[in-house]
Image (tube, rainbow, N blue to C red):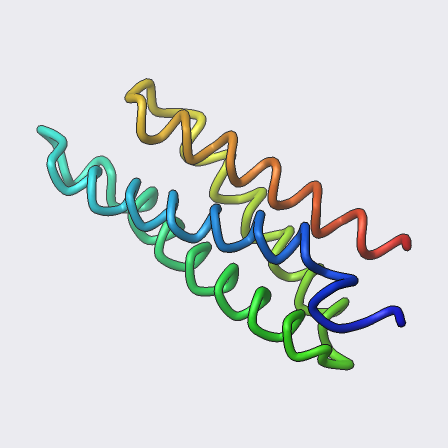
Length: 112
């Protein structure tokens, strides 16, 4: 069966991990000296976490829209990774890497 939890299991786990790390990054960004400079990062972190949670949920439901949302998730993850990679702090670097992994996992589903 090419839908449902077991088919999407790996991507679901990667999306949930990415969402958690994005939330951590957004929260950690509020502790930075220049929070205003981190505004775009915080916004993208929150958007990325939201789409990752939604993507994981639709995949676990075996939704007919899972592939489409994976494409959107990958786009947002890539944008978040690009922003976070511009910041040298540990939480942003960790978030950038997690977002890259999530985008890659979602893109794999688009061609399977």
